[in-house]
Amino acid sequence: MNKLIIHGGKRLKGEVEISGAKNAALPIIAATLLTKGSSVIVKVPNLRDVITMGKLLNHLGAEFYYEDRKAFINTEKVKIFEAPYDLVRTMRASVLVLGPLLAKFGKAKVSLPGGCAIGARPINLHLMGLEKMGAKIELQSGYVVANARRLKGTSIYFDIPTVTGTENLMMAATLAKGTTLLENAAREPEVVDLANALISMGAKIRGAGNSIIEIEGVDGLKPVEYSVIPDRIEAGTFMTFAGVTGGDIFIKGCRPDHLDALIIKLKEAGLIFEQKPEGIKVIGPSRPKATDVKTMPYPGFPTDMQAQFMTLMSIAEGTSVIKETVFENRFMHVAELRRMGADIIVEGSTATVKGISRLRGAPLMATDLRASASLIVAALAAEGETVIHRIYHLERGYERIEEKLLGIGANIKKVKEQ
Ligand code: EPU
Image 1 (cartoon, rainbow, N blue to C red):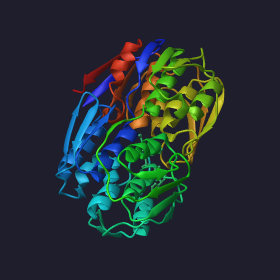
Image 2 (image 1 turned 45 degrees about the vertical axis):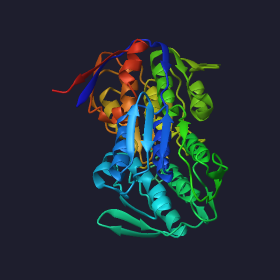
Image 3 (image 1 turned 45 degrees about the horizontal axis):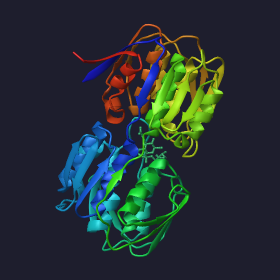
């Protein structure tokens, strides 16, 4: 296992290029199961989760080959319809094969993901939707076993807008008989990107990006070549790196229109943005200003940026209130930040952050993916040395993060744990 050693206090300056979005690439790769033949998905980030999705496709009988940010997938020989526990437990997004397998082959057996570091994360809404489309669903020894002759179009209302739930049902509906309406659907850019990939495969989808998505089922989909959108959370994380170091970073190849809520809040916190055709330049203030945020489904403030934003607030002038409404347990980073001197009190889903002038380096333990990113934000801001242990979470979601940080002047080193 690797650890990161960071000496904080350096002003970051330079250019970084944003990778393709993990959370768009994963469902698009799963969607190729709806086709028969060879697809090429480009701008796929080189990440552990992508490799795990590849292993899962291999397990199902598909060919998956990854090279140079391209995933080559051939689905001609899919003959197994089961996502085993070992793969689902290392990556919850494995559940994204449920909708495609059921729609295309009429059966799927997928291990039920357990809770994880950020919350219970049930998939009841995915299952409710598939049942409404006519699937027979049973739970057997920790697995969801789903069967259907051909799914039928229907109206499905989500009590909570769920990202992978919307994606699973949108994929399932593309091959259903008749029209499906997904109401109170998730509106994240990754849902829209998946819809665009499905449309390129021949699906009939209207309204992705709005809360009502209409899918008219077709008889078959064809393989595609498709390029995924840039990773908005990686871009947002680099914005917070600029914010805590008084830095000047040009974030190349990102889509600022996917980051409206975050950029508005970062401007309130004193960051300056200059939009250019190829990306956005971010200049950090000498000290950020306290700013309140509340996480919400898109287009609200993203829960995947809450930990990084809280770290920025830990050194802000004044007190900020941060409310997490999407996941029930997403404050794992707080205990680590406190070890660096941060003054944060958590009560239920609300954190009150009293800004201090300087964090101090310390040995830290990374818990989940975004919490790990927030510890890098903290380490870059801190005085002295920070060692971040257990960084495999980071490797699931941030491509070459230490190289990118080195390129803009950070003092960072990745070393093997003894
Ligand atoms: N929920 C239910 N029932 C369901 C589905 C969801 O109660 O059937 C609840 C969840 O427990 C949660 C809320 O609904 O409280 C929203 O969860 P959602 O389903 O939208 O999350 P997800 O699809 O499991 C994706 C991303 C997460 C990101 C969330 C929220 C992928 C692969 N994962 O998860 O990304 O935090 O949406 O935007 O797209 C990450 O990249 O670090 C990450 C965790």
